Image (cartoon, rainbow, N blue to C red; front, side, top):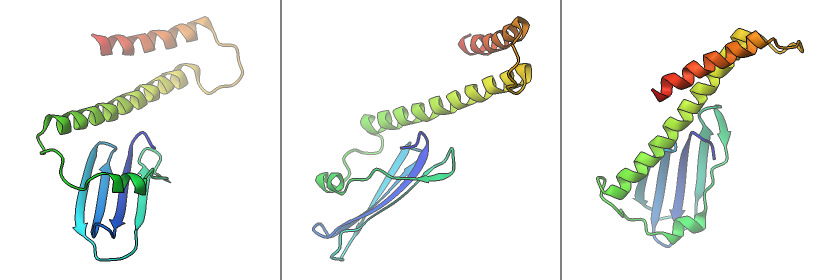
Length: 143
């Protein structure tokens, strides 16, 4: 699964006469809607997108898993379990964004100081400059 993605799942269970639509937004907020279903076929459709690359990815959805759990609210919206789940998912999203930002900043510094890779021998002053600039980023974040 993508580090940051959107997933939509449509699943019908003819035995329960129910249809489930699940939307996972930014791998953070999961919304499920249960609807009546009067068909006879089991349907399982999904669509997932890695929003960082913009590419479609395969959603990991198990019909067995979906039929093995009750399709009923298990916790009220403000329940501590729900809040903790949202908090952990948001923390993961923010960590990913921070890591991507730091990586982009390091790439920018390297490109600015060293230029594109050209096979030349790096000078100590260039390496020192990169290290000093990265050190300043690290220090500014831990202060």
